[in-house]
Image 1 (cartoon, one colour):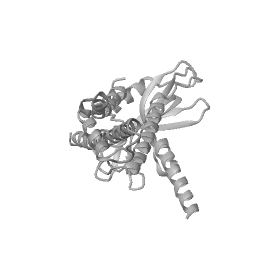
Image 2: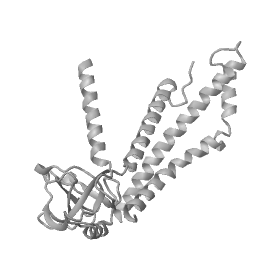
Image 3: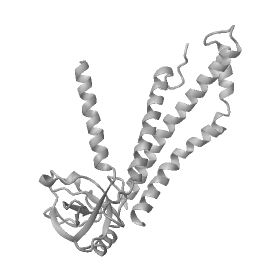
Image 4: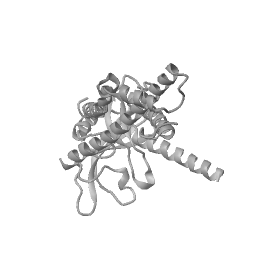
Length: 187
Length: 93
């Protein structure tokens, strides 16, 4: 029983970490090489990695969406592809509905290898090539050179708030266990 | 628009649940503190006596008007401000 509890606890911890790793924003220093949209099939296996239906991206009868993409190159030469999709008012709570503007900004910041314009792209999500999933770009900021790594304030603040809430819930739980909900008096 | 209304609805439900739990929590903390105050003042009357219960009941009158109790209403303000902040930072920056 003890080992079972430990195993369940470890699995829960991994699940929480993966959830936060997916949902929290992350920043990457990249150079934008191309922007375009392409018909993309959103299937049952990768639908949870795309935005919810009816949030701005048109979906046709075959379940294909015309998704905007941003192709980038990292300072180490490896490529990275972002999608650029509205999240609307649903999950995850980014409330993003300016993907057309973001696409225009990204197109404006395209640059070649000889005259690179480095940018910091904030995005959430995972690039899983075998499921055809892409991180969703949320914002783009210009940088002065490739070694700049802007601090990820948003994710830090969310983590601190979640920790404070966890401590609060733990204290409330302890108080309710000790004294009930208030109408049962301590002897 | 329906999605926006649903967001507001879910946010309100979550805020109400959290508000009620927090309210029970801080009232419970205050009541525990009042019992300790009574026990310190009356070391010869230990335990959960009717006098102590009456003292706690009397002292809890007006607790809803205290600053701590009123600060709880921030539960209905801060999440909404956070949502508006996110909307601003994502779409207008």
